[in-house]
Image (cartoon, rainbow, N blue to C red; front, side, top):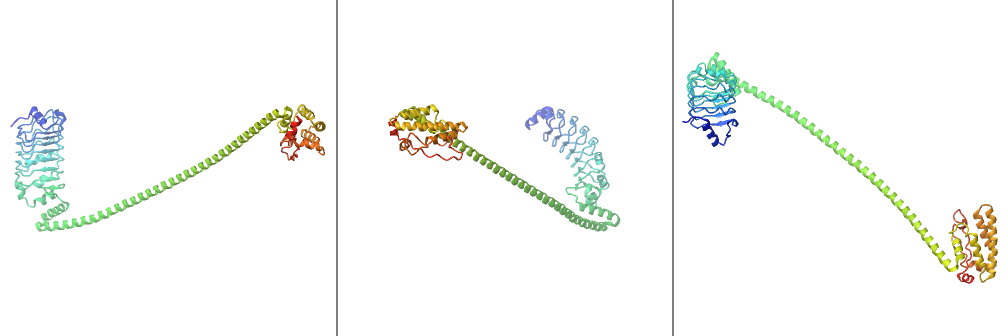
Length: 464
């Protein structure tokens, strides 16, 4: 046998791979170590559970600092007296089985104790168990395998423990000699739920109480009959209660089923509403997209139309530029081929100089050149016609109508058509039909003048 010292405890902790620092341990296993005392535990002030079974401890001591201790296991030691537990006020479970305790004492401070095991000890009388009454919440007691021989007062003692629910009292000498031991214990201890390794059922309690009451007045036979009737009545009541419970359960289940159905319907309704809302939004989105595409198409058509108009305008502008370039080219060719007067006449005849073919000076120069040609008769006739045209134009211009003056001058110039010489002059390329717009003939509903005879290029060359 050895002493319990801090060094010995430290060595055990090292073997168990526990914490080296004592205050970190809440459970300490010191069983089967052969200790003959309890000591060296002051540093373990946070212990909640202490195992000291199967040692050679003869006295409970050295627990003054263990104020947080809740479970203490001291079975299979050599303890004869219960002492040294005054500071363990939080103790809930105490195991003193297989010791040499003869009387229960030293439990005055253990107001939280709910379970105690004092089996296999040397308790010989019911009075030696009186120390259990100081524990107000004691609900489990194992006092089996002791030496209590008394048969009287046993039921009264155990029934005085108001919270007792589990009791082991078997294998005591007096228990074997008690008449109707189980019936009396069950009926006497009102909160008992477990007796000697067997549960106490409600029907057993009803029968036991009926037996005790009937046996006290009518004997054992009356007790048995009362017990049977009580059991039958209880079973009928339990069956009826079971049926009622089942009916209540069915009602609860039906109500739950209805709630579930309502919940499912609500969920389906919400899903349908969500689906309808989604379809509505998709339709609105499709309509908006279609409208947007329609607007885009319209815009594209408008842009294409504007582009076509721009292209047409550009084409017209290019055509006008081409016509202008062509006229300029023809003017340059005529200037080089027939001289400046003929070129000026062609320029005026093409409409480049306005409503009247040309200015008076250029016009006079043209007729002078024509008069000085090889054929004097043609020149004289042209000059006469030109003079008449100038006079008619002047008369029409006095009224402010330029177009009328142009028509008068041209009509006077072209008035005489009987002369064959004039026809020859007018048939050549020298005189070309005026373009539309010249002398006010373009637009306005005016008739297009008849083509004038032109002078051929060969005759014009001879005139030059």
